[in-house]
Length: 195
Image (cartoon, rainbow, N blue to C red; front, side, top):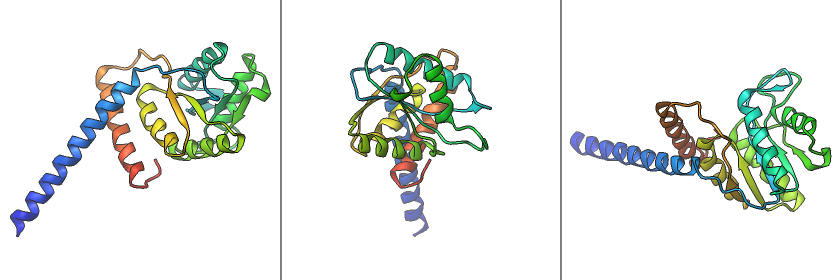
């Protein structure tokens, strides 16, 4: 009986490792693919902000969105992200201010300010889009993040195209670790954990 239990456990563990490896490969493939094309909105995933200023990661995402907007690939930009513990500012609000400071009209910027995780931000963004009659989005984030975000949006009926922000600063080992984390995050989301 113990041997059978051990065999089942080992088989389940091997299956989980295979699934994570397979997803990591899919995430890596998506991370380098720019699918930007005409859409209803450019969706910028939040990242840290520092007292009302975007962190370098958030700024790079916003700058990439500005480039897509300048190419007229979408008439609106939707910024996401809650407060992350900041009592005054939100990632989404800081993103909006940055975009407006760089010439995007206020009526072309939509803001989601309550999401405290990727799941919450994509859920709220999809709901905002549904209410506004918007059906497609160019997703701007770090490359390793886009696969999971696209899956979350598509599960809510949004057609999503990935467009990763440029980033040449991470080592191959760090990227592999991020692919692994995103694969685990994706699996947790699939079983209902909000990460």
